[in-house]
Image (cartoon, rainbow, N blue to C red; front, top):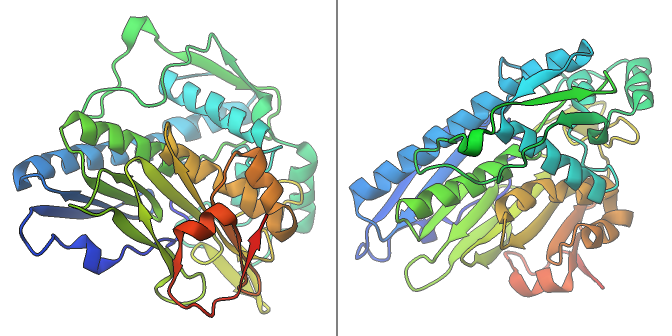
Length: 366
């Protein structure tokens, strides 16, 4: 369930420091995108075992949260459309509660309940066709107003969002058992594609720490988290240019920081010279126009999760509303690239970036 090729890691900095310290890197394809785990300073066998645990966790979450293939989430969606309650794991219930809180904070611009709209546009598929959906169907889905607040979670246990052992297991502490979920609105169709990769980043960080890995870079389709350092220097990553190969800017990521990008340049189709991307405005039911990409920088508790979910409200709010959305989501370091390629960014984000082309048009917002 990947969206975009967003952040290009700088290859020169992904090599070991002159070969003096061990450097381990492994790639895989999960969540419908490429994932990379790079580990610095640990012996190869220890790094390999830790990476295997991380990759297994990624696959577990992919299998659990797939929106249109058989999964715990798709089974819940099937129950909702029938007006039935469904037992789900405490972990999924906690994700839904948290996603509902993020949705409320965003004023509904982050809305994982609009899977019906995403499907109608053809984006719940590995490949999609360049064709417009029926306008009446889109209007009906918007009128139905599916929202995360429509969900009812019975006896919510609220387990920690990042938990479990280094093998990715999630022990049922205290007999938490299962939780029942239902919806008062049958139009709710859950798609956690804008949430899952960030959740997985935090899980990966927890697993690596538990296995004694303290210097690593984790990249899930452009959502990137740094642990520790790359030797004596911070990790360095690039923000993908939305219209050309390579990065538009680079920045240093420090321990516990993460960046996430929402962009219109991977999951999209073009028709009659117009681009339609997978990022849908819940208010209109149509793909967002006039924005090429948004990147945010997060740190601290659940930095990975916030790097994923909190970028969506900025993208949906567009050039006129992104800065207010950043404030409401408590994001101080952010940028938006508009439809003409102008980079709008906060003053704090400007301080962190080095543009690869100094002639790149940009506007610092106050």
